[in-house]
Amino acid sequence: MTQKKKEKPAREPLKFDGIPLQELETKIETLHIASRELQKEMYEVLEYLRITKRYKENPVYVKSTFWQYLEDRFTIRPGTYRENVFAFTKHPEASVQLGVGLVSKINRLCGNVKAKKVIDEIQKAGESSKKPLPRAKIETVIQKNTDPERLKKREITDWKAMYEAEISAHENTKESLRVAVARVKELEEQVERLKMTASMITSIREIVEKPRMSLPV
Image (cartoon, rainbow, N blue to C red; front, side):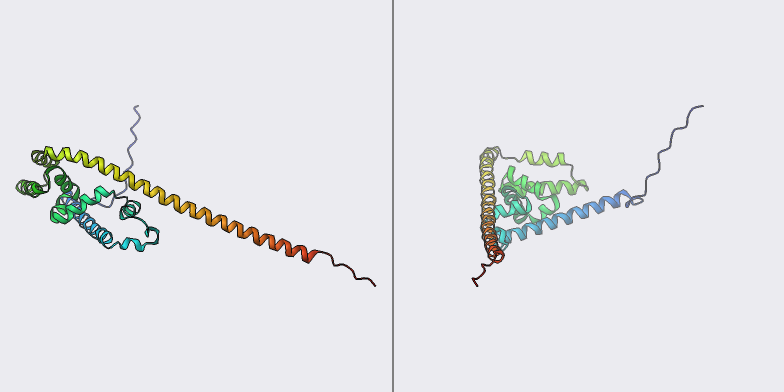
């Protein structure tokens, strides 16, 4: 007799079981747009802190640059920050609909002047197809409008950004070292105070415990 195959145990029901795929996809798209709206607001707040220098109200960053604060607290590189702020400022609706990364890429490869034209072309192509445009078609539109001279300049800029990143990392290291040295000095002073206190206690104890000399009769 052939042994019956063990049947796989039925999985436990999951949260989205029974919901039609179209409804789930609509939910995802809605949440995706909402997350981009929140990202836009986040950059608006960060840019406010940069312009007003209010980030220095945090006592840890009183003597730090905004870029040190940005990388330390939110792990955002200066180059990424500048690109995203520019995209959300110049093309807010497109940045929310298409994503700030894509809009930044269009600005980077096609230039600020042609960016609006490229974005419009991508959006119109998406509207005519009545569904999200495949990434391959978006890339085709971008590559068609890419400025070769801009790419050469971009390579030079990338080296500059790398240099700035190294400088920023060096400044962070120096600041961490300064804090560590100050802490060591503080601990050394505390040890010296404890030593003085211990010495005083020992002296007092010796005086108290020293036997009294008897007076002559």
